[in-house]
Amino acid sequence: MRPEPVVRLRWSAGLRVRLLLAFASLGLTTTAVVAGASYVQARDVILQQAQDAAVVTLTEQIAQLAPIRSLPPSQADLDAIAAELSDRDDTAIAAYQGHSSRHDQVSAVLSPELRTAVRDGRVVWQRQAAQGFPYLVIGTQLMVSQPDGASRPSNLEIYRLHSLQAEQGSIDRLAMSTWLTGGLSLALAVLLALLAARGVLRPVRDLDQAARRLGEGDLSTRLAVRGSDELARVGRTFNHTAERLERQVGELRRMEADARRFVADVSHELRTPLAAMTAVTDVLDEEAPHLPGDAGRAARLVSQETQSLTRLVDDLIEVSRFDSGAAALALDEIDVAAAVRATLRARGWTERVVTDLPPGVLARLDPRRLDVILANLVGNALRHGAPPVSLRLGAEPDWIVLSVGDHGPGLDPLVLPHVFDRFYKADSARTRSEGSGLGLAIAWENARLHRAGADRGSLVAGNDPAGGAVFTLRLPRRCVDPAPPAEGRPGPVGGDR
Image (cartoon, rainbow, N blue to C red):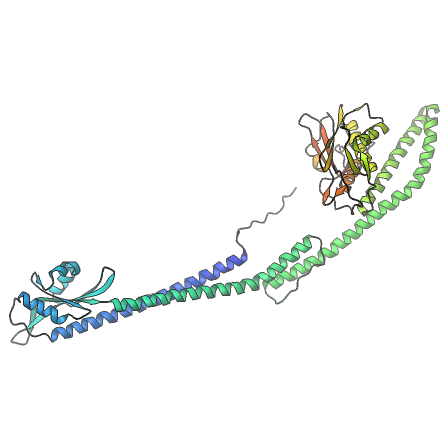
């Protein structure tokens, strides 16, 4: 047996979710790259302009300072220089060889690297932050003019602490604008994803619904195909497949109907000659004991085969009724225990079957079909099982349960799925036997014919753990009438063991 192909589903999320995630990821990535690069570039430009302007301003203010009369300057000179270079937003510090105008801020805001660069005669700056406020530290050294026109370093260091709060506000507004742009981009990406998903998922949803209707048996299902993209090609392929399937199924149904009609017609046509042959075999049965040798054996053989053929024709007619949906119930209120005893008594099995039949179990069933089911089950157990054969009745509020068991070898596990198949026999070498292979199939159909609402009767085959086969029949206690046509047959349905 070849294994069935397995389709591996790699994605558990729906297509709509995947499209939303893809568009959102693309929108966020694009926004992050573009807005981030713009933010960094704009921030650098703002800070660069701020520090360039602060350096130029400090340089110009230093050039306008009054000349220093003597070096080293006094503390008053340092304080005066710092006061002249300070304003409302900026603070200046003047330092000379360990002395400064603001001793409390020198070590806190002036890093060693910055002071070393200033002492080398360069103009330097450094961005820092204190207590959450950003500022720019600019440092330079005051130059002293010589009589010859040259200048030399005076070792008088000038530092200015320039506030960057205004620039930081601009940068914060830029960041907020960037976040807002990202949020709008995400919303736009989700909107586009919903529109794209709607356009893609509508034909997919239509295809899903059409496939479901087709699977439920509506072979006339077709898709309305629009466009010429991949989904449209899938729709055309589905329509082509459905059309071919409808033709093939229609042909199979026609052939099946022809086969059923042929079996029914042949069975009915055989009933008339079989009736005549049965009358003749009755005479042969009376004369067989008086016939010599081969003639007597031939008469008995003809009688047995005629009876077997009659049973087979009757079974075929019954099966044709099930297949055509013509089988119907003749319901009656019966005492189930009494009906079971009548079935055993009519066939002479009363002494051969151990029964457990509690009295007073009433049910509205078809007595004739119950008789057919029990006759097939008990007869099958007596022929193929081992004594003792048992028959037990159980009652539930809405169901009756009848189980027929024996103490034989039981059913082979390979036989169980096929025990109710038509014409199935467990022993393939037993091509000739008194059973037609239809008894259990007819019993299964009769059990399914009983129904109450959506619930149907059932007949299940199995093995008792203690040994032997067990057939369990469950029928509703209040069957409805008339029964609808029989459904299609499932896998495990029909024959003799």
